[in-house]
Length: 99
Picture (cartoon, one colour):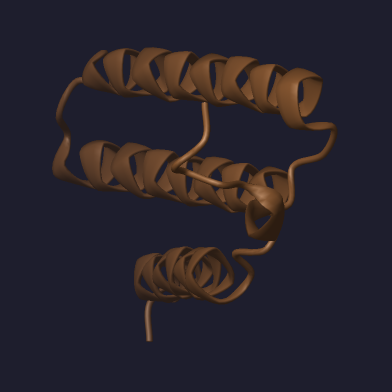
């Protein structure tokens, strides 16, 4: 098993772990946002590894990292807004019929 295959396995395993946490721990918005950021960072490293192995330019990864940062900032703004209006980030306390 080559070193690149071992790195691919580790990165795919980290993405799978992030997806598992995203699907199983849905009680709090902060846990969901943290697992999304973990998935995005794992996919970013997977993209960097793939682009460096194939000899492509790594410039495309900057666009991906920019969108991941924007997603994180949007999620944090949503978290702050929800905590200010509802008092906590627990999904069980939200009533979607009430504004």
